[in-house]
Image 1 (cartoon, rainbow over the protein chains, first blue to last red):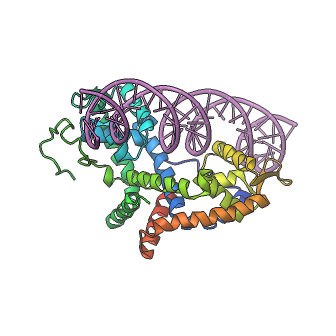
Image 2 (image 1 turned 45 degrees about the horizontal axis):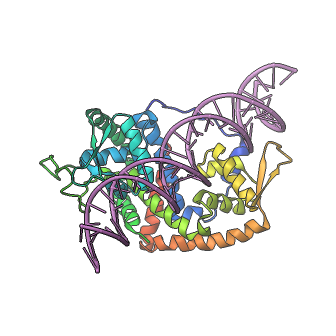
Image 3 (image 1 turned 90 degrees about the vertical axis):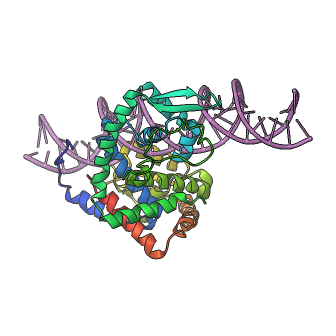
Length: 163
Length: 163
DNA sequence: CCTAGATAGTTTGTACAGCGAACTAATATC
DNA sequence: GATATTAGTTCGCTGTACAAACTATCTAGG
């Protein structure tokens, strides 16, 4: 948003020729390599676009799920997001410290911590969602609608596989 | 895009405590979410399949690039892999400590460290490549050949974008 | 009922990755 | 020759993954 035209410094001839001559071997054919590269690009733009870098993709996802499922337990969150339950503790800690989420001990099962958004969390989520969609739009614009759906479908098949 | 549950007053989660009634909201439609989930699945299987967990995807990529481009400089590696140059130092350190890579100060430009595989590194690469292809195969098997190519094409378009 | 096992959450410890900032040595540019 | 740029490094900070052990609680089998 703020950065319109980067310096666009021209490479020296030496650097340009060397960069162009790199042989990436089998890497460009590998699913993992391409997904990793795509992930990096998305992640960087996310940091620039959403919450001014104070929120990570995992935190956004957690907030969205708590918003859609008030009272959800941490273990359900970690299952849905494929995040380790130990890592989830720190993630929720940060959201709680920020004042966006509260843990409430469940009465029926006192092992559980039900998670809900605070009013501040609700407000934050509205902002986050708007910024998130703006972020998403930059990349969705690279595709036709059918391509985008196809990409999502193929990715979903991959992460639903559990080999 | 919203037509799921009209009465937004979801029961306090205890009712749905059993299993998968979680509403993932907009997340499943987002490119970033699906790529992140796919990445996690791939990364876990990689850890189980390749080098018995002693190698990370970034290390594999680095070794493959050094193999294909003997004498490549660290900055070229980090550009190609989209890894921060500061992070690259530690990555190369680990590969050097393992005895797979050597840094050699360039004569023409003495700032540069040319990277090459040691004989042990060459040998390791042959093993890694075999295990990598085995890992890849598990996931490629989820797709027809044209789907796989389509997926790679769409991902490449994403990571070649630099918004 | 009681015990054994499972589950939710936490803590601890280890390792890795990203990123900014500052630094050195060497090279390039004017 | 002064200045800027580049390659590599180090430091500090934050965040994530995973394993292991631990507490508190719930569930099932006998």
